[in-house]
Image (cartoon, rainbow, N blue to C red):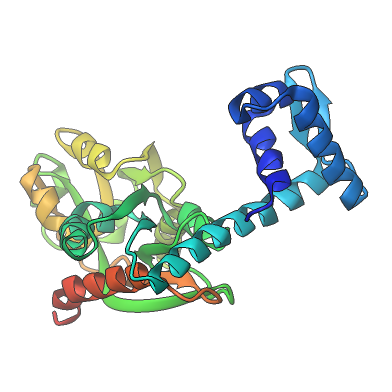
Length: 300
């Protein structure tokens, strides 16, 4: 079993207090303190620093936390695979997805998958490249559905499925909405909306305008939700970039594609999994559902 000592350690990390962690674990505070001290003695170093409200990790503790969470996730993955040996199809899948996937692609995929795997609990986590890649590397996610526009890593295997063009949209009342052959010079001074923490997307936009000798456009608002971004565009004097697969949703909200005379950028979209962990039967089944559902995009 995954070490009880490490479980106790992670609970203290999560709660930030030995007293609160002891209550959550239903053990006495002295017993939990003894467990943490044993772990520190085994490692030959302190793991926590006392603060006014409890405890916080020191550098050694941060290192142990990272590896302990990976170990915990791998243990759960092992339980799922062992269960498959007896034909059991239980457990959970933790899927990370960027807005394009989360809103437009995955809903019917999940419904189709759970017809075959009704006892698999699905957990969908939204994010962007800069939040989802670290999450899968650490083992917090089993799979990410994402733009593969990030550097290759030995820990991850990329599975390209289709090309994704980034287009620019605005409300139909925006001055550029009715202007044909919009240029980079026209777009540069506009007020832009963007997804929070989407540093890759923001960098791509800045790099695009730099090729024309223009300064990066002003980001007027960041939001964590693609629906919030699209709703804010309505009736506002803003522009934003979205994957072309989301154009239909944008049009349903009264938005239009700006007649830009170039492509902002194109990237591969697909899946990424950890390289050194064999996918479970359920994860393999889910990947097949995704590939089937996205085949229409690769045929365009």
